[in-house]
Length: 442
View 1 (spheres, rainbow, N blue to C red):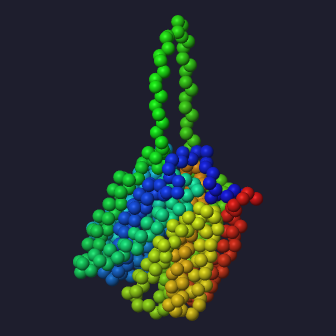
View 2: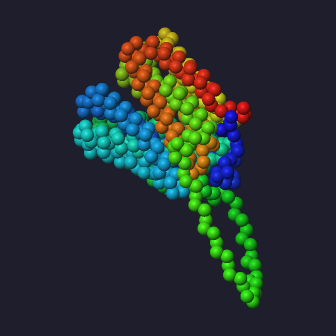
View 3: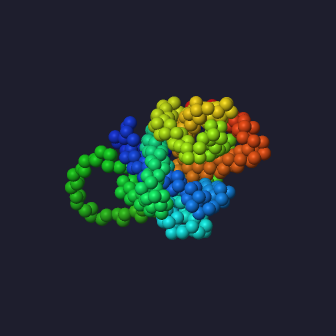
C-alpha cells in the first residue's frame, strides 16, 4: 500500500515556490485571517441564536433542533457542488470560496429582516449553512495548493488555530454587544454582518486567484540579449502547420476520485470513524447533567475544548508532518474514545476538565490532519472535488452516528448508550488501523 503523507510530488503538482522552506506560505496565513474574521461573525450568531429563537421568539427546542439538523445535513451535500465548481475552468477556488463567504455574511441581514417570521429565519439559516458548505472544500484545496506536500500538516494546523481563535472571540463579542445595547439582538446581527463582509474583503485583497501558480518568491531569470537577425534564405520552405494543443484532462468527478485506491481507503476510514462519533453537544450535555451545572454556564463548556484545540493545532500538524499523518489521526480518535470512557466514571470537576482536554486533542489531531493525509492522493485539478467527497462522507456519517446515539439514549438511557458508542468507536478504530495505508508499501 502507498503512504499518502510522503514528501513526493504528483506529476501535475504546481512548482514549489522558492523560499517557503519552513515558513507557512502567505496564502495560508491570509486564508487563516479570513477564517478568523468569518468565525467571529458566525459564532456571534451561533452564541445567541438559541436564546433569540427559543426565548425571544418562542420557538420550541424541538423546532430549533429540527431546523439546525436539517440545514447541517444540507451543508454536507452542498460541499460536493462547491468542490466541483472550484475545479472547473482551470481552478476557480477563490471565486467559489468568496461566494460562500459572502452568502454567509448576507444571511445575517436575513435574520435582521426576518422580523420573527419562521420562514425568513429558516431561509437565513439555510443561506448561512449553504455558504459554509460551498466554501469549505475550495478553501482547503487552496491550502493544499499553496503549501509543499511535506508541510501540509503545519499549514492546516496554522489555519485551524486561527480559525479556532475566531470561534473563541465570537461569543465574547456577542455578549459584549448584548451588554452594551441592553440585549438588542438586532445589534448582534448588524455587527456580525459587517464582520462577515470584512472577511470577504480580506479574501479578495490578500488571497491570490490561483494559489497553485508560482508566486513572487520565485527568483527572476536574466533576460538574454536578442540574437542577431539572420539574412533571409533565397527560397524559404513553408512553415509547418502547428498541431492543435491537446485539450486539458477533464476534472475528476466523485466516482473517478473514489476509483483511486489510496484515496478510497481514506474516505472509508473517515466514514467509519465518523459514524462512531456521537457529537459534541451530547458530550457537553452529559457533562452538564453529571455536574449539575447551571444553564448559564453551559456555553463555557465548548470554550474549554476550543481553547485546547487552539493550543494544540499547530504542534499536532508539525508532528503529523514528521511522523506521518496516519498515526496522529488514529491517536486523535483514541483521545475521543478516552473521553467516552472518562464520562462513564463518576462525575466531578476533574472528569469535566479531562473530557474537554481530550476533546480538544481529538480535533487538533484529526481535523486538519485528515485533509493533509488525503490531499497528496488527489490531482491538482480535482483536489477541491476530492476533498468535498471526503468531507461530505464524513459529515453524513457523523449525522448518522449522532442520530443513532440519540435514539440509543432515548431507548436505553445515557450510560448504556455511551458504553455502546465507546464500543463502536473501538471497533471503528481497529478497522481504520487496517484500512488506512501505512508508511511503506506492503
